Amino acid sequence: MADEEWTHRGIDVNTPSVARLYDYYLGGKDNFPADRLAAEEILASVPQVRTAARENRAFLGRAVRFLAHEGVEQFLDIGTGLPTQGNVHEVAQEIIPEARVAYVDHDPIVLAHARALLRGAKGEVTVVSGDLRRPEEILGASEIHDHLDFSKPVALLLVAIMHFITEADDPRRIIATLRDALPSGSYLVLSHGTHDLRREAARKGTEVYRRASSPLTLRSRTDIRQLFDGFDLVRPGLVWLPEWRPDDFPLYDDPSEALIVCGVGRKP
Ligand SMILES: C[S@@+](CC[C@H](N)C(=O)[O-])C[C@H]1O[C@@H](n2cnc3c(N)ncnc32)[C@H](O)[C@@H]1O
Image (tube, rainbow, N blue to C red; front, side, top):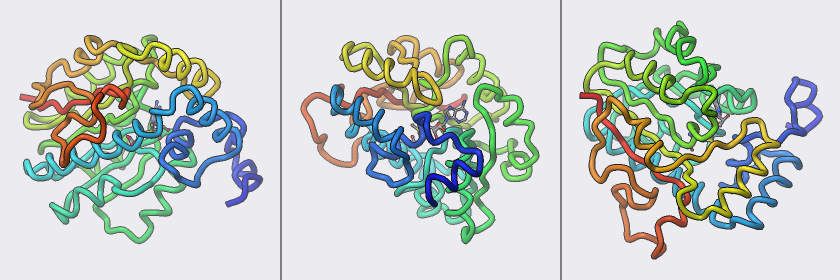
């Protein structure tokens, strides 16, 4: 679709969108000049961002495969992002063909593309407009309730989204609200940018994202660990992206190049 057509539909193509920046890092085509400019500004100072995005996607795939092998059949993916390769339902349904996925995002372009992608898909997948800052509304949405059975384990995916939640929005309250709605045996999959290392990269990223659709709030590993409150981290715990149950030998010597830490927790 041409840029003017999106504008016509009320989409702001001039403010870099965090979903479209991520799409650009991954080599996607669903982005506009303002997104590309901002992304290039970050990449010029922090070239590791591109690898970080790929590693994040790879972690998401490994975590979903792990959970499907554990028998989890339902996935609530909040902060879905623009469709790319290895979308959650594709990965999960390779292992459990009837796996159910609810995709939630607040970006209208993400929702439009996700709905288009899923037009031909089976009824096991749904796309819902929702804002993570208001978890009660997500949990209360009939599309979510009609789709997922909250009496059975659900994997809550918060992958590369919590760093778009500011302290003012109380990230621990948000996760606690969602956690309390899930039965025992449910899981939290989370990845999050950290400023613990590479302070200069963190400074540049934060500066550019200030102009984007959501500001970036990088956190310490200690603070990110606390987001798993009420979940037991499965092995290997909270680690750099490439260190979480790698399929292969790591691509680089220093896993902190991935800039993002991740983990999977189980609700006892
Ligand atoms: C970096 S992308 C991550 C996509 C996917 N989870 C992944 O890891 O590949 C972040 C996504 O979170 C969405 N997002 C950011 N803040 C949000 C909020 N408050 N509510 C819902 N979605 C949000 C953005 O629109 C974007 O699609």
